[in-house]
Image (cartoon, rainbow, N blue to C red; front, side, top):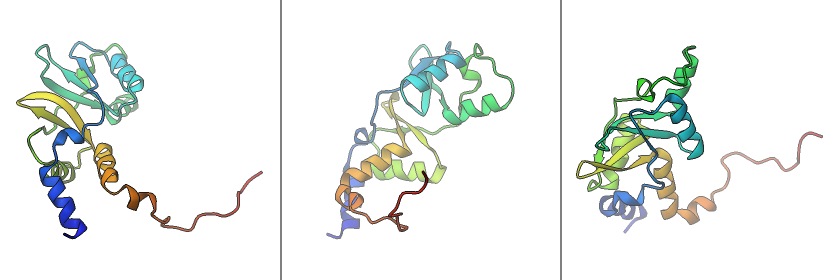
Length: 158
């Protein structure tokens, strides 16, 4: 079986939980923008989910959302985080194939995709998670790639 066919078969049968690389980074709706920034920093995460009292996903705050807020010139760290959260997101059920997850990320140019299991949020898959997943299957190929451009042989500078 050619390598491409093998990869497609893996994408169709592998469980989405193999893509989720870290614990869910989440805050309640009552969280402030300062709480969101602290959660991003402390978890070394590029997103934080905002959940309601029933633990349902209400929105996602990304680094980009925080930067837009800071760039707007009105920085109130005590404002509710939900005022800057993104509510325009897709979700995908965990039972979907990795191929479907990849297609959803690609078609919608998402960087983060919430994964649900019977309607309950179980994690987020990021584009970075997907790259890590691919590297696992092609580790030898990736690690032995030659640089695209010639590298410099001598150090520059003082």
